[in-house]
Image (cartoon, one colour):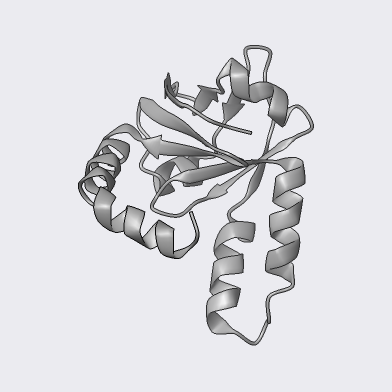
Length: 143
């Protein structure tokens, strides 16, 4: 599982190092795609295949299902690691997530999220200020 929060730089070519603790779980391959909340999602290949199968089985006649599947599947790219443990984030995905020189890498169990540093701080501030409301919602979900 992926856990933790890390700050990593992105070089001028769009390469970013994946934390060492996370690399092993991506050794069989990794996929990056547009995530929710203006971040990127990185999935191990096996987790990506599970998600892609679910998306492929959504009803093609449902407009919102088609839009969601297109967003995730058409925007996806397979990642390759260089010898330094870096991956090249495609320009269109860096632009989507407004990634600059630094990015936040957050482990979220079965995926990694890559965030613009400022957007991440704002998101955390917002969610922390809504902690009571979020906790009450989660209790309704059985957590």
